[in-house]
Amino acid sequence: MTQPSPDPARRADDRASDRPAPRRDHRPGLGVEVSAGAHRSEDVFRRGVVSFVRRSPRMNISQTRAMERLTDRYLLDVPRDTTSTSVAPGARLDLEKVFGRRAPLTVEIGSGSGDTLAAVAAAHPDRDFIGFEVYLPSIATTFNKLEDAGVSNARIVMADAAAGLEHLLGPGDLDELWTFFPDPWHKKRHHKRRIVNPDIARLVAGRLRPGGLWRLATDWDDYAEWMLEVLGAEPGLEPVDAAPVTTPDETDPLAGRPGLSPRWTERPLTRYEGKGVAAGRTVHDLTWRAVGSRP
Image (cartoon, rainbow, N blue to C red; front, side):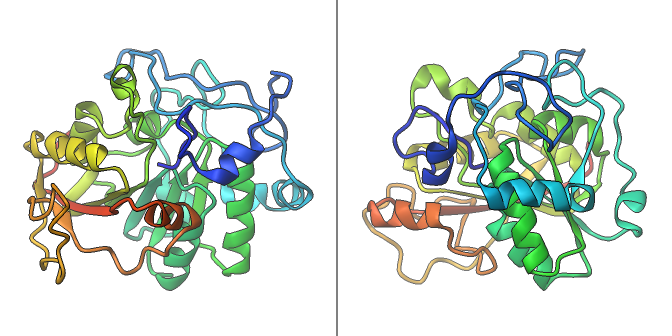
């Protein structure tokens, strides 16, 4: 999930656009939104901790026009709970109504500027895609990329992905879930903000169909190790046996760990990933599978 944080390695385009603006409510997609918070109902996410710090950035002309032209086409408005990016309990998506069919569904947590979503959705018109994203400039840029790619089988939900997975989707609804380069929240006191956590792992195990895949990637060793520990502790998930990397990095402390996999070839190289590689960080891909449906 590409999300801003106090860390200097945060994504450059988010950092550049995070300029303070007056806090005021608007309808989704049509103006500046107030900061998000977790939904506060009787559920596992009641703790009110979210994996992002949301500001109210300005959009450039292209992004503003995209919001004006493409919101009705690509943005799914959902009932809210207590904040502008929360999700009301019971707000289930009617997937057949949204897409006009029932097809294998892929969800991306933190779709960012839409590079992966647009590329893979365009390459797989037989599948449907939903991206969860909370930053308006990123959503607007995604709209432009979806339109440029001629995509009609993808939608964006501006909401906290944890609450979205819990309330908008049901058991077995997902064919795949993606979590690429989520905010690592390096400081120990911030680890509770990491989107990959035991609650999410349990939820994902139930939302994936049996055999459905959770694809993850990070360019931080400590977060990769954290992911392996969290996913390995969830009985509803198991590592996918993947072909070994042909030239393993002997300096990589995680090399050979079950649950790591070669880079997924359909995932495009984004500017964020390129910066991590240029900085000398190792990109770790993980692929895990749901072993059974859990409510």
